[in-house]
Length: 487
Ligand SMILES: Cc1cc2nc3c(=O)[nH]c(=O)nc-3n(C[C@H](O)[C@H](O)[C@H](O)COP(=O)(O)OP(=O)(O)OC[C@H]3O[C@@H](n4cnc5c(N)ncnc54)[C@H](O)[C@@H]3O)c2cc1C
Figure 1: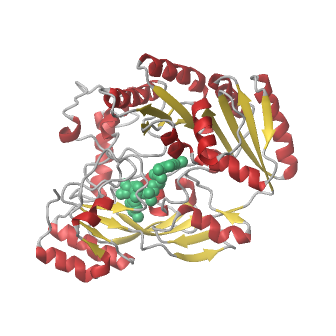
Figure 2: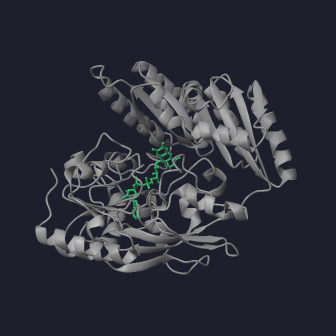
Figure 3: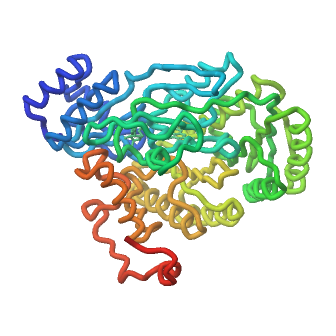
């Protein structure tokens, strides 16, 4: 049960957002008790739906005065429990702050509120031949505020970079209610890159209420190649070889046979039926794309591609991406339950790691389907299971966590884009040493000394993870040599 707010606090909150901006009815609060990671659920004490920076500021001032924890929420599509309420917290849902405030084509900028849906940014500038590059597969439903908090990526971030590359300036309400501007509309402002610190901080440093985004000119030509392989190893090797050859496609995505079958049932993209499908998008000036295409097809064929098909026109390309972007949801066609994992490995390790993951899945007698941003080495193994089979859920969770261990051991990371949230906070100590984590905590405390902004996320805590001492502190070689110091 949520810790309740006092009648006095509730009436102050009501004064700020009026009746239509305050939710307290238990059945309505249920909508906000989890995000896309439905295994974790905590009912919030109340939900606030502010409509302006001033309202967010008043809410945070009150939270600061009364020591009430708060959790910002965009569209709730997060997959790591980032928008999960904390015990006794309120949720600040930004869905009503959904206006595009300014479109500045000459300066290639758009200013929006945090609740604007990602795909609506591109829709607003497409008539002028511009687009907003970060394109998470959830882009038709997720919000820009959530994208900033998670530093969201997507298929085209291989060439264009993650969200952090595309946010110029933000208005942020700090946890004590102070309103600050982070970043700048002109490039390379002097001083600390505090916008860079905020982006990817998963709602732990305050609430972003306005942001100016970089938009890009649509490329002259776009081509999508579908390359069919007999093994995922061969497809992965092609990805490595394409990049090693000096090519930079806009996107390189791999889907295995199970995901192809699921996408086919779900949205009929008409993919070649194969063990591994490599989708490669090339964009730029026509002459450059023609040249790149010949090289890329040649590399795929050398690695055993038995079909290299071009999506013939814009409709065909749309269908190709629709199939890829529907892949997580389509996993529901394969199995009653599944866990979407998100880890990163060096691109060159793709073939070896994928073989290892297949062996691990076989040993557990579980099916794992793979669909991922191969160009970035960002894996999304989807562990399929049936909760009704005794013990299967536990084995699936255990396998999905061991997959992360394999990523870290290969020199990668426990998350590429879905964030740490509530789900992976205990894995943070697998990746970072205690001094690393303490340094991050100091940054957090500089913004939020009272730990009110999305508490109990991102960092391992004794309550959630147990005491996990790494033993006696051993200085890093560069610290021992006096080049760096731990403070
Ligand atoms: C089918 C599917 C496909 C997906 N594909 C991708 C993908 O390709 N790439 C990818 O990166 N992610 C993907 N995701 C995950 C998710 O969509 C992204 O993490 C997205 O950025 C979350 O946005 P949201 O608006 O839903 O945020 P929420 O889930 O509501 O919140 C996410 C985090 O952001 C914080 N937050 C929200 N708004 C603000 C704000 N204004 N200020 C401060 N903090 C805030 C919350 O506290 C929380 O910690 C996918 C999810 C699904 C369900």
